Amino acid sequence: MRFVDPKNDIAFKKIFGDENHTEILISFLNAILDFKDDNKIKNVKILNPYQAPKIEELKETILDIKAMNEKNETFIVEMQRKDLNNFQKRSLYYTSKAYIQQLDKKKDYSTLKKVYFIGIVNFKIFASKHYLSKHLIINQENNKQELDNFEFTFIELPKFKINKNEIDKLNTITEKWIWFLKHTQKLDLIPKEFENIKEFKEAFLIATQYKWSQKDIEIYEYMTLKEYDEINAIETSFGKGLKQGLEQGLEQGLEQGEKNKQLEIAKTLISLGDDINKISKVTGLNKLEIETLIKNSI
Image 1: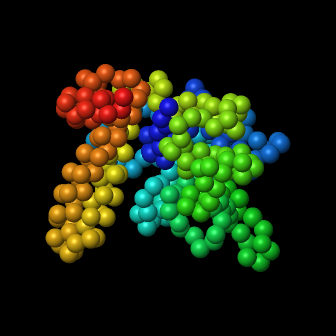
Image 2 (image 1 turned 135 degrees about the vertical axis):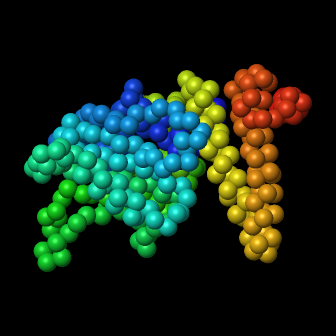
Image 3 (image 1 turned 180 degrees about the horizontal axis):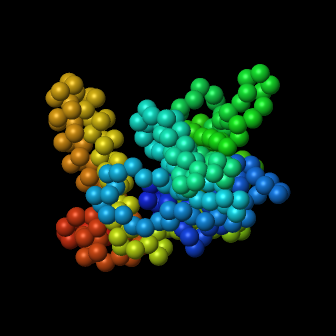
């Protein structure tokens, strides 16, 4: 059994933005925001449910998850894998925009409800050693949260130190969700520690690409290849002279990175029992290359 990387934009939205499995998002939000008892979210309406985009649409920045609970509070959840040096400002922009959009033409400010922003990043952004941090608007004089309609929570995955083989160290649902995000793509089976938790069982099932459409799979693989190529090209370019490295490294990185990733994708599809024609269509490999992979996997 193989799992997708939940940090991939499409996979993340497939898992947490599924209208038919809102219990996954509810569990995640309650855990990360530490909602307990009467504060627990019971229902959510996903405002931007997943729809497979066109490849050209992937060039545009889109919010990963936007949802509303039974109190009409808004929740924005965004996954960011690459450090673009502006994530904090983007979080402020998205949150303030969602807040303003609640107003109708009458501008009845009393109707405005709280907006929560949860940012999950695959890099470090704050000096603190803690992987989860909450940011509020606080009155400096009395240290009270008197402006409470904005709340920001950030999860910095590199600071989460419980590795793939240390499941026994996971003590809370919060830790389990962050472990899921960070390590799922490295697994071969659903860990027994997660099997009896409905929300996780559903999340792992979606992460196997079970019931994904062919279009969804192609978009996931496209985004994976695109990111791999960018990283490979950058790493290659830094090993050469600046101008020459940027030119040669980009070209070589794209070529070699694409080939390596195509092979990995093909191996995954072979393990899932897909036929050669389908694998060739998804990966771009010729039939001889695929047949060779099949022989080597036997």
